[in-house]
Image 1 (cartoon, one colour):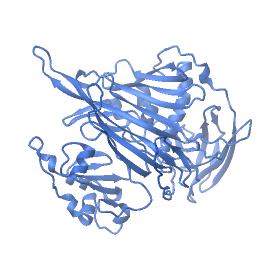
Image 2 (image 1 turned 180 degrees about the horizontal axis):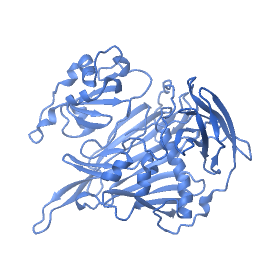
Image 3 (image 1 turned 180 degrees about the vertical axis):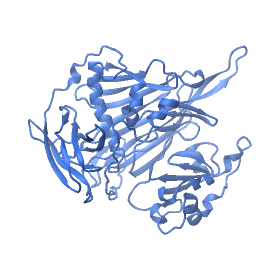
Image 4 (image 1 turned 60 degrees about the horizontal axis):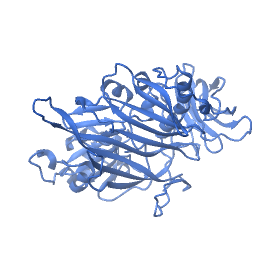
Length: 499
């Protein structure tokens, strides 16, 4: 599973050809800077073209894709939504803009939880008010997950549970550190709308959970209904599949702090599981946190996937029964800014972690239409891999035998990932593991690209050399420990620039 978030604490250098807005947001009453405010640059057709989050000084930089007329839109919890006058951005020019935003009383304290179900999230007053705050936090999470900027020490786990949800054996855990991407990503929202959140294949069931991009998407809003609910100190935006939705789907609640309107966590479960399987304990939880610099991060996550087996009962139709669960997830142990400043430290930290290496220079986030969800994947496959693997850490290039990184590929004449491995590590391509009578292919080398099983070594021909960022070889025991049975021949992991 993956994790990276960034606040715009360092203003990047833009090319001379760029059309740039550079500015600051302040509180209209106190005149103090507004950090952590989410901004978008919108063209005259209402399409979002760039995003940013203000730094500690309330400063921001937005780069337009072309010269033209744009508006700035901003929303920060506890402040009025803001739309600027039209800004004419000229080719190669930088426009300076300063805005004072009016504070408002937090509306969530007055939300009446009436339980009225709305299938248009903007229809009911209470639902619309809560959605307004949730949407901004989710948009910040989605934006920050696209660019590298914070250094993380993450701990991952994978565990197996009995049908009674008790641990069968000790957890499999491992640490990863570096500048990372989001801990998990979902399939594109349109795919989930068309195929559902649980997909059945010959090798098992694949479970998808909603990430920030999916929750913000038009397909998700179109296929779910919403209502408000409350717990002590929290108010929740609950969602359920719309009437007539027959595919496997998700229902859940986004919980918000009633006092400060900050997003706390998402909990969800699966509905209409395939083959009439019923298991309300299947689902997941994602905990969010706003760090002092204003960025929103995912602090903890877990997804629970039932393991089912068809049981034959005389004179009755065969139906699957839950015989156990697989859980996968993780937590942020420490989070630091590129200069080493500590942003977050878990109470469970017992040993000092070395300071982060220098951060890579950030680049502007790609411009996206307002209704487009980033192509992505919060993957939790039960049969293949219950965790998704992160893109490689930036910084020092590893030179050990088990890894290759793109800096080593510059002089290679190879055209694909197979050629790179054949040139640098040809022994990786040979199977050395035992085969199983039940699974004759278990001793073959398998290939995972950006966390997904693609097949054997020949599928490396499908990955262009230009896309490859890092390659790694896991031995049979290592691969079995991470991916489960059927990987005795080892695994080649490929991370690309699309991960």
